[in-house]
Amino acid sequence: MELNKDAQIDTSQVEDRRGSGGGPAGIPIPIGGGRGGVVGLIIAVLVTLVGGGFGVSQLTGAGGEEQGDNTALEQRCQAEDALGQLDCRNTLYVNSIQAYWQRAMPQHFDRPYQESDTVFFAQAVSTGCGQADSGVGPFYCPLDDQVYIDLSFYRVLAEQLGAPGEFAQPYVLAHEYGHHVQDLLGTEQRVRDQRQASPDEANRLSVLLELQADCYAGAWARNATGTADDRGVKIFTSLTERDIQEGLDTAAAIGDDAIQRRSGGRIDESQFTHGSSADRQKWLGTGYSSGDPTTCDTFGTAR
Image (cartoon, rainbow, N blue to C red; front, side, top):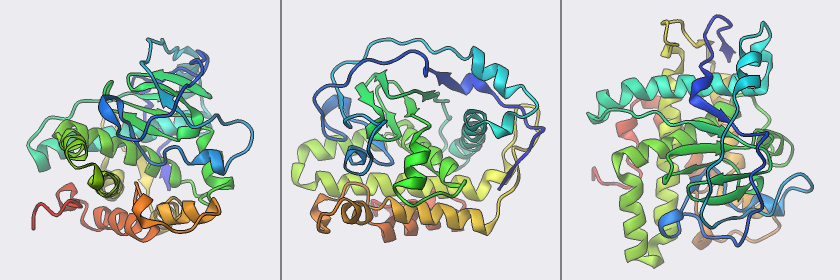
């Protein structure tokens, strides 16, 4: 995987709150619970795997307003070594993902795409879904239409979860933007309503939602080398099968069964919320093989 050093990094698609604090988290709420549910790559599991530096994996209460400051980020991302900076590379990944959906949403779903900011935070953050800490992992909040990530999560992904590949990073972001697309299409709301109507089906529906986000991430990956900045300059100069394999390895590392195994528990499919390693690999691969997000029918509605 190689990013184009001539591509313009649009920091307006990111809100940098790493210097703003975020306050303490409170009592945990379940993923997708009530009106303040969140959807994410991994949620409320890292506390069993990670030592110091991460919080208590909580998200609760009403979020307050916080102001980001992109001044330092803008300066770094205009510098000669911008692509050597983790936050600048991730900003460019966001640019690519959103450039793809700007074209793909009207093409495949006959709907306009609405941009969503990614919020960089450190340790804790206030969101429209409540207060969160880094232990929840990356997530999307449908109440404020924003993606949230503490970039130190990538260290956890590499060192604790066994997914050190560089392509793990854009896969994480593309998965979260998959949730944003679900929100725009009304899928997230329908699943939330179904979960409330049939609580016994809540986990199964959560898995289907997460696997579809994986598939959407695969569709972006297939088309990533065709994405460009506002000037028409391509964002990626190359994306190889090795990169895709890194994405598949990441999907395997964060499957529910893999996480249960790492935490020392038994494999309990009834507690799955994101899907098994095999299923996550399958649906990421489905999106990548087709390059068409309409093939991401994890709910089986086409059948």
